[in-house]
Length: 228
Image 1 (tube, rainbow, N blue to C red):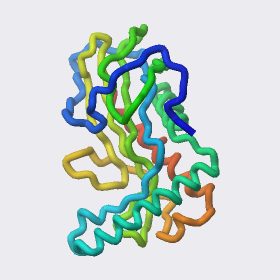
Image 2 (cartoon, rainbow, N blue to C red):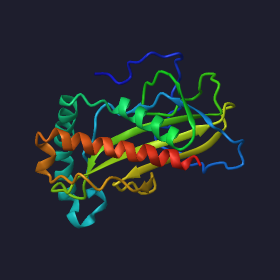
Image 3 (cartoon, rainbow, N blue to C red):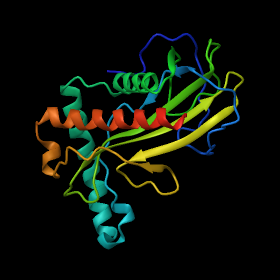
Image 4 (cartoon, rainbow, N blue to C red):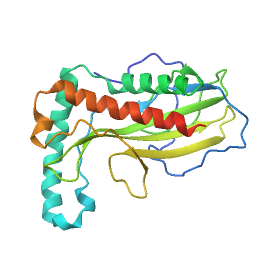
């Protein structure tokens, strides 16, 4: 399953800024915009199940080493659960974002492009829109403070809003239920489901999918709210 395989009207080069390297607050002096071109998002192929251990010195270097050794296995098992449920994060993020923009009063218009990496695009194809919304989701899944849990759904998204001339009107990175100091602005994420360490690896597919989808949905609503 390759989330990049979609019809494209343009081959666009990545700008090499998958993370929000330069933050730009919303330009409220820009001309009002209602029609937003939703550029085909870039979303990580596989989910993640990290912890915040690198930031918790009380666990020491040994605790962080053990967690690093276990993280790959957590990622693999989480990916298996989502794959068995035929959950496609790219499609769900696109749907959530489109619905959130419409609910916020905008007119979202799909702008198909080819994505080759987790980076903002260097340029956008011509379209009858007031602004382009470029989103990159490098992380989504479950996160906890320690390997024992409780694991909570989380997501990270980089956002760029640009006018038709290419001027950046907003650029920021947001993260829910995880700690990314100096990298992303923290926002509220889903409070449920809460999974213990072993719970993340059970076959309770519905709860796992529900959590991942809730994280993406809440993040999409937050992004739409930032454009006001």
